[in-house]
Structure formats: structure tokens, C-alpha cells
Image (tube, rainbow, N blue to C red; front, side):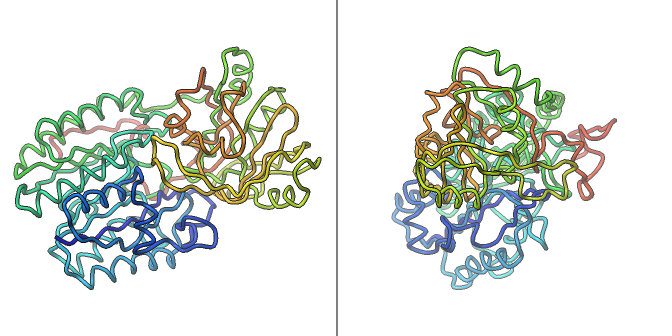
Length: 500
């Protein structure tokens, strides 16, 4: 057996001003997205779907080619040049042919300058070259699903956890189902549908209701005979037609069962729609509430500026409020400011510096802006910013925040970084000499993923509504392309499984 494997992942925030060029998909600055043996070396043994695909191939003794290992932190529209270069790397392999199956590690919410359905476009191009070879796809839970993303593949599986600690398991689910088909042990049949609702990201965690019960039911369906059952909560910061919640169920030569299970999951999601709505708290009140807590560490979530949702990571509203209210023994991860990093490096470790940090990237699609904050402190640490994830999320995968420094004001330690990375892994902080267990307060530019590697350390959590392109106030998002009406943005929205 011979398999083609490829990774091409990006979650596109169409409101984000952060450009998404080809270099952003590389493992580090100045590199290109790895291909061939370099990609295999980068992703073998990692807790990713690609890592699972490699393991599955090797376990059955199959030959395989890894055409591309491209993954970029969420940001703005993928530049057409980047999209075409990555697609071509995959299509070249497809053209060479000779494969018994194709396994794709995709996100499901990629939007390029020319294609609002980046994954569907890739599948259309593959099918134009090779209309017959079976395809299995692993998608992120936040996929915004279009018809071709499902109907041009034979097996589809999505993450069932958020934080995404089951990336590897999802690769196993999608890959195993495809291998069963190739070996004549299964005949996949698929049903999918989408709801007129756009769940709030802050209410999507599978550790909390309603998603906990819904994802548990999807897992139970797989134990009861479904090949793959996936509830895609969707990525709302995308002004595209199909943003929002959808369901895909794959069964073994039983389309009626696939439809029945799909309808059950969609009904569960619709019946719980009020629980997907998020209530905001004013920033000053949140920080003041945190200041009254005495069981440490307290995690303060700067959820308007999460790099894993396309945030610039350079907004300063939460940091400024923490400084204004005088919180002490604080670690902040992180402010994206390459120029401030270089200024601190030039000053050297131990130097006293006065830096204007953050607030340097305009957000033209947001109704607010962020101003720089002055940090007066000592350069405590200089780092190359490289580490590997401890896990459980994407365990073993390489991370690179670029050159980084830590500025210590006496009360607050602030990490300044040169490349966007979300702090979902404890090693993001530990590699900079920041031990969260030794801090009273830890400010994280994160929404939910931080719970994967740091959640067990938190004694309390305070969600802070700051500023940023991944705002949690959806009234600030000017949707022009999203299908309407849609809950909860519009009133009187109705849905029935009978209409599918």
C-alpha cells in the first residue's frame, strides 16, 4: 500500500490585520514549510493528526510520502501566493500518482484572498487530477464546513476536544476509517448539515456544557458503530457564508444511520443554543475582582487578543489595567513587539530600560484601538524562543516564538516576543524562566487552549475583555458575507431537522 500525506492548516480571522504569507507556515523564521523527509522528521512522534498518519502508515508497513507539513498560527487572509505554493506542493504529488489513499491534515477554516473555502478548493483541485483515490481528512473542531470539504472525501473526522488534546486521536479516526475502506473492510457513507447558529468561542470548550455532553455523545456514537461522528462548533471570526456549527457523521454502508445520528447531534446543539451565548464583564471590574482573590495563581485571560484566533498579540488594554490597579507578582505572556525585543537585546541582560511596547499594529476592521504601554524595568532574560510542547496538546511539536525577552518592572514580568504563539503549553512560560506556580497572577493571551497545559495549575480564572481582532463582543464584527438570519445575531431564527 502507498499513501500520500499532507498538512496544510490555517484558521483565518478575516478581521485580523496580521498578514499570512508563506513564511508564516514554516517551523521558524527564515525557513520554508517542510516537505518530504524534513516534514516527516518534524512531525513523526508528535501529537498531531499528521503524526498519527505517519504512525498508521508505518504500523501496516505502507510506503508513504509527506508532501507538505505547513501550519500557521491563526491570522488574516492567506495571501494567494502562499496558498498557491502550498497547494502546488500537494498537487505535484497527486499528479505523480500511484497512491492507494490520500490523508490530509487540514483545519477547515482557511480563507485565502481568492477562496473563502480554502480546504474545499484544495479538494476540488485534487479531484480534478485524481477523481478516484480515496481521501481521508482530519479537521479542527472550529472548521466552517462547506459541501466540498465533506463530499469530495470518503472519511472525515474532527477534533472532539477543545482544548484540542485529541489531534492525534482524530488523525487515527480519519485514517483508520480510510484504511478500512482501502482494505475492503468498510464502505463509508456520509451525512452532514449545518445549523443557523454561530456559537461563541468562549462557550465552546468541551470541558464545559453544552459542548461536553454533545462531544461525549459523538464519541459514544463511534462506539456504537459510526466510523466518525464530528460536531464542528465553527470559527465565528470569519466573514464567510458558512461560518458556524455543523455536523458530519460517517457510517459503514448505512446512509440512513448517518442521517439519523447527524440529526440527533444537530438537535442537541440547537436545543442548547442559549448556552452557547457569552456574557461580557467590563475590564476594570474583572481586574478588580481578580485583585480580591487570595488563592494563587490566578489566570487572567486576555481573550480579545488570542493569537490562536488571529489576534495581533500586541494590544495592551489588559496589561495597562493590571499596571493601573497595581497587581503584584504578575507574569504576562506575551506582547508581540519585535522592535521592542531588539531594543532590549541591544541593551543587554541586567540593563534598565524604558520601552514603549505594543499598540503598534492597526486594526482597521475593529471599532477600537490599542495604545502602547511604557515598561520601565530590567531586561531579565533573552531567549531564541524555541521549545517543544510538553503536552497534552500537540505533544512534542516544535514551537518558535522568535527572539524573546522578559522585562521585569519589579511587580510585573512581561514577555516580549517576535513571532505569534499562544500559551497553551507550560513550556511557553518555562522556557522564559516564568514559573506560573510561583506567581500570584498570570496574564495569558488565550481563550480556552491554555487549559490544556496550564489549566491544572490555576486556582481561579478571570476573563478579561480587553481589545483585539478576536473580540468577544460580536456586535463589533461587521459581517457582510455571513448567511443570515443566524442565531444569536438575529431574532426569530428557526430550525428543524425535517428541513435537511
